[in-house]
Image (cartoon, rainbow, N blue to C red; front, side):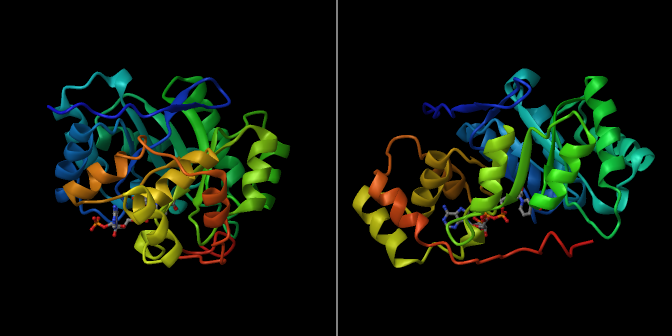
Length: 277
Ligand code: NDP
């Protein structure tokens, strides 16, 4: 086996360490997920990001079990779906996720969306507090929380989310949220870090890629890492799975970082958190 890159970790606000680069499996059918995650683990990824709604927790679990890797070497994230929000239903949904994954705990459990029209995320968070207390969740976090949702959560609980996983890429840079996260010790995790490919043809990114003899995707991931974001790029293509991990042997200059930061364009590729139910 070739040598695998060592992925740096970020220490979350409860002391748990998360690999700064992990593997996403959104839109991967369950029957293809085991092969994709197996490729990722062989390439050197140790963190996998799934969700109950993706329908592929079982496929992830099979790859983890078959890998022979010790549980402590792995970092597994899953998410509570909107329809399961509420105190009791969160506990039940969590049990189903654990059973599908074939695990006895997850490293990070996220409320997938605030779903403000349901107004249940405070109840869901109380349930997650008990899961943390029971040792079944090592770190608790949220996803797609806007500043107002985060502030309300912080006003009602002593458990500060370890992570807010949000859409973030050069086209949607989320400065307000990143500043709020920094003020509260919440790690910023970028979903669709490559904007599902939508930013990769940008001329500036191509130019930087040529300059560093890298791909535009590698330049974008490097930009995230240097900003301090956690990233979870998804690919089902083995060569891209490896390429996306091979981002630790070069760096962008301050000027290049600033140039990429100039691409912010309010380019939201996914749903808006204020309205998704
Ligand atoms: P990404 O930004 O990771 O982009 C994935 C797409 O880019 C795929 O079409 C993939 O193609 C392609 N791609 C991957 N690597 C490369 C490369 N090196 N060069 C060119 N194209 C590439 O999008 P995702 O939306 O999947 O986001 C990543 C993860 O974030 C998800 O898998 C999921 O885990 C999480 N997520 C969380 C959400 C939330 O609400 N919390 C919402 C959305 C995502 P191919 O696979 O064909 O190689």
